[in-house]
Image (tube, rainbow, N blue to C red):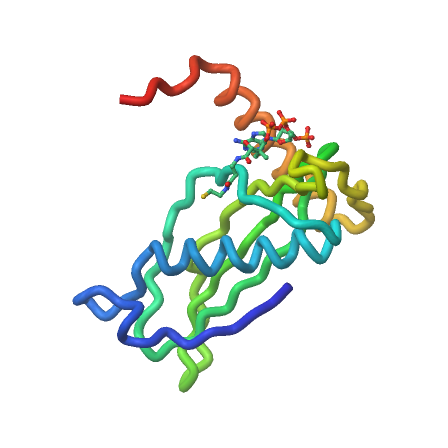
Length: 151
Ligand SMILES: CC(C)(COP(=O)(O)OP(=O)(O)OC[C@H]1O[C@@H](n2cnc3c(N)ncnc32)[C@H](O)[C@@H]1OP(=O)(O)O)[C@@H](O)C(=O)NCCC(=O)NCCS
């Protein structure tokens, strides 16, 4: 799933660069579409890995978002999202961030429901699967720690 957007001033901070939260919102929505297209079910965002922003996107630039399902479990999917900023006049492109978001398919009963197994064929798909597996392993470790205590 590839989508393009324009960075408008109402999405930016006083430095004229996009709010990180806006980029996260685009990633969440793009990844939701990619995972829904994959499993043809309703999905919810279950978690994200830590997201590092490497380069800013400036007002007036093109925001390009590329989301693909990289890993599948029984009912969950990990979606890889790449975000680039592009100067529309010069064509210069910069990587803003790459992040992995975890979605769970929800059935008619409101409970997690099985998703198809991802077919992994190309070398790139294998690399993305391995990264997805690492994200999943980190998640398992996190979940096995003590539960958060509400304050
Ligand atoms: C995500 C959610 C559906 C999981 O429900 P659950 O009853 O814990 O489900 P289960 O323990 O049966 O796990 C189902 C799958 O979800 C995965 N999962 C559960 N919690 C997760 C989390 N925090 N992050 C990623 N995956 C998670 C499990 O690993 C499992 O994956 P698998 O089937 O591929 O092995 C549930 O916690 C939920 O609805 N959370 C809120 C989601 C939401 O509203 N998001 C928007 C925030 S406003």
